[in-house]
Length: 223
Image (cartoon, rainbow, N blue to C red):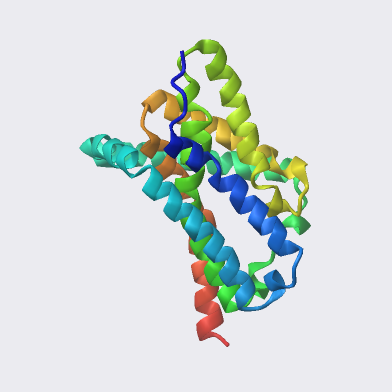
């Protein structure tokens, strides 16, 4: 039988829905369109969610990290491998369902949005892995039926949570659903959140953070 979710876990579970709700409410105002206040508000929302997720789960993360770092190099390289597989799934999947025009052009963004675009993907893996892989999946793996059910539920919700990244077009979230499925299986296999968390972090660093930093560099030193 599954143990009921603790108050900390329930609070963590609410973080992403609250982020989406606040983001939607802000989109109804002119604040989000302001060149400085808009990006700062977006960053603030994600930073507070990240901070809350870390503080609510600090003991769990610390204990899991102690196990992960026992064979740090091997475990990190395994996370790198799954980050690469996740990346392949995204590139192949998006090539099948997503036209090139759906991607935003970072080169046309000003410095502050570019900086925010570099920082948010570095915080997201902590919140998303705790919510989608730990609370919505791994906590339910005490029976075969619930394991299979929550494997699909958590993966689908992971993809849907990113619908704003694709102008609200849900079909383009399918590759992320497949990627969420991969990360859930990775966590289930290794029984440690840091494996999928590090894979997610590495992927975001390679495909979001580093490109944004490079663009930021060119914006600062070539204009």
